[in-house]
Amino acid sequence: MLVKVFGSAVFGVEATTITVEVNVDKGVGYHLVGLPDNAIKESSFRIAAALKNNGYMLPGKKITINMAPADLRKEGSAYDLTLALGILVASGQIKGDEIDKYIIMGELSLDGSLQPIKGALPIAIKAKAEGFKGFFLPKHNVKEAAIVKDLDVYGVENVQEVIDFFEGKGNLEPTKIDTRAEFYKELDFPEFDFSDVKGQESIKRCMEIAAAGGHNIILIGPPGAGKTMLAKRLPSILPPMTLHEALETTKIHSVAGKLKEVGLMNQRPFRSPHHTISNVALVGGGSYPQPGEISMAHNGVLFLDELPEFKRDVLEVMRQPLEDREVTISRAKFTVTYPSSFMLVASMNPSPSGFFNDPNAAQTASPYEMQRYLSKISGPLLDRIDIHIEVTPVPFEKLSDNQKAESSVTIRKRVTEAREIQSVRFEKMDNIHYNAQMNTKHIREFCALNEDSKTLLKNAMERLNLSARAYDRILKVARTIADLETSPEVAAAHIAEAIQYRSLDRDGWLG
Image (cartoon, one colour):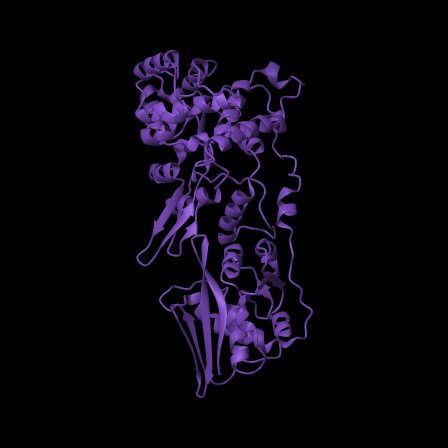
């Protein structure tokens, strides 16, 4: 008897439906074809034990299983449940009149219970698009899949529950989630709040500008000045995610298997990889491509602490994703693209010892050592960072002051208002939502300067020897400063403030 059951494969952040054809015939043998990897080939042992422990068996006949399309590589253990149900129906052990109306995915344990799978959300989206009636998957993943409306999503703990459903015995009910209620429920009070930060008013101002325009920022200062503390608080002042952004972000984390029994993500991600990270772990890839840290930070913040300690080639591979806001990974037979629109926040010491520009510390690095330390970061990468700001240690008077600083909620309100101005400005453009995403054409259109501003910027360009890209960055930051002040024009004061935030372009910035 020949039976067709349906599973799904995830490539990038999109799913492809896989037809699993199971044929049970006279003879002896177990033949699995259609480019399965080792995890799928080993499934026969898991399936045999799981079925036996639930009162069923692998038929002692010739079992041929084809996973179509046969030229597409299938990977992972998530097809165990699909294959097991196909074998049971094809061998006549259970009824399966409507089995072809459902997507079935799950990894089997030897006792028949189900282990979590990756990519449940993209699979559910594809199942709905292709008109499937429902989706069976492990209970651990049910919340992320149930986000999709008009699809019956069944979270199951054991293979027996699925068998009972098709036999008409069980009382399995689909999981329903009110996506909008789940998403718009009040955001938790931020764990890290700007009200905890003493002093550092100029740095907080920089953070506010960076958040309002989505600008990349680098913090330069000695150890203990508060660089990491400030960076960790940046997500608390970013505007809340839109429903579309939340869905995109949840898809990436679903594919990477990083969702822990949650539905839609409503908090912006904050990723802080260690400086020993490899190229592949940062940008994504591998023999079976997976999203890297820059994609996991999509719509959120990627924090690189101690930037010069990262391997230079690791930093260089970020240059293209920083510009294109997506990363494409090519293999011989396929290409996948992961979105990577993130805010880069980097921190670094000004010298190997960290105290090069501290007037109270002994100078422990020579200019040569200093130059060698800074040369680990390439000019093109620094050009892609809009705001450079020095962080100085907080004096004792500020640290011991009991007065509460401005809270993240208050700052976020101003940031959100500035973002709304930008949303209106770019509403007719598909891929641009805030100032940092503007290209040269948009800068010319939205950052027009009067004569005073032009003269000021011209003098700064000549004195600081700035590149054309740095010129564009200054204009983008100035546009954001103007938006925070609800000013339709970019004035000379906005340009002057934006120029201050290019510390690393200035000669003698260290002393």
